[in-house]
Length: 430
Ligand code: AMP
Ligand code: GLY
Image 1 (cartoon, helix red, strand yellow):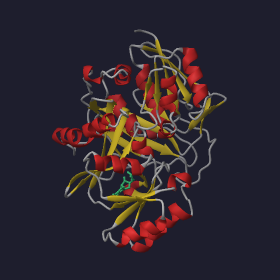
Image 2 (cartoon, rainbow, N blue to C red; image 1 turned 45 degrees about the horizontal axis):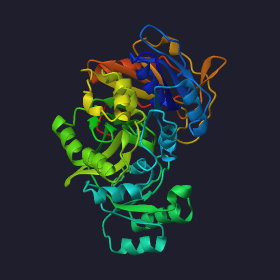
Image 3 (cartoon, helix red, strand yellow; image 1 turned 90 degrees about the vertical axis):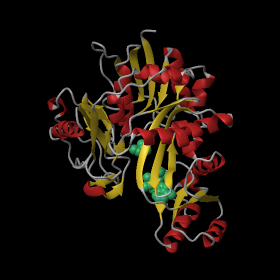
Image 4 (cartoon, rainbow, N blue to C red; image 1 turned 45 degrees about the vertical axis):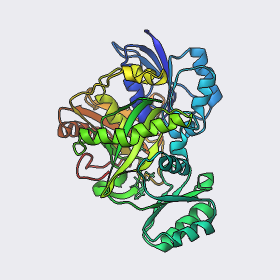
């Protein structure tokens, strides 16, 4: 099984990290990333497969299927949630191409919060109390009977912005109006989920699944707020580190037994087996562990710190998931730490300019992995093309060593307006 090619769908730091890891597989000789970014093209080198960005967008499903068929790819890997929610896996399956990711119905665990909550309720998976509504009057009526603080969520995908934490009844009503009447989130807000507001420490656990078996990954923590000290607006993630020291192997085992395995078993029992990465956003409350949400894909930037620590050949793991034989694989992890610092465009997560030259990359130590996210090449030179521009990533024997190396590299890179957090891996935020 030598010399396979792999197609990765997506354009962020997560997809660059996937390409980086798959290029190191002994089975892979060529990677394609569609559409990729300024960092996802490189030539083959000793023990590393070549990678090429191809100009097909993630939403151009039929073109992607045609490309993969023509190339005879050995594996297709889907990065972001939107194509999964749109049914891209089903399209590859119809064409008999091996594809890693959940089908459209299975991806509803992320793409519909109402589906996900009802699923958890039906399968005894611990989560916050909730109700779902399409009609604002019904929602208001229910709220009169529910006298605890709530969180209001748009049902569908809203780029991480569809969750509104409400402190007062007025805020709750405003949130309902924003979603159901003003249609702030478009069709994603045709329905709302109102949930009991929980308190506790948050963390995420990601696991591979083949539809029957699960294999948890090392636990990573990301930093969601834009500014140091957990201040500023929510972002897609300003940095991450792995492994975290505050979650024990016993807790992971309990999460697998009480949450992840029952989810996979429940999806199989419903006739919609879940293959791909199951990402559970969890909260440790005074009453036990609760699921806040499921994502149906690798995290970004969690992937950038998880994959550099994976010793097992990633292609073998993903193919085993697709072929329903994950039980044959034992995941091995490096006894080390990994940290990533995201360099963002000035103004992100709000408005920012693009097309700014990125300099200094050639001065970065070769052992540091600079995963590109929002970049593109102009006359061969990298320029900014998105909010999160680069994820500067280092592995070290300790978290401190990894952080020092990553920050040393950050100081060598420049683009106008560049901002980043100085406290990745410090404190307790999530
Ligand atoms: P979600 O996209 O559902 O994970 O929500 C995004 C963020 O909102 C989470 O990371 C939590 O910080 C917060 N959140 C979501 N649901 C709840 C809840 N029921 N209680 C308290 N905070 C929540
Ligand atoms: N870093 C959060 C996510 O990927 O959803």
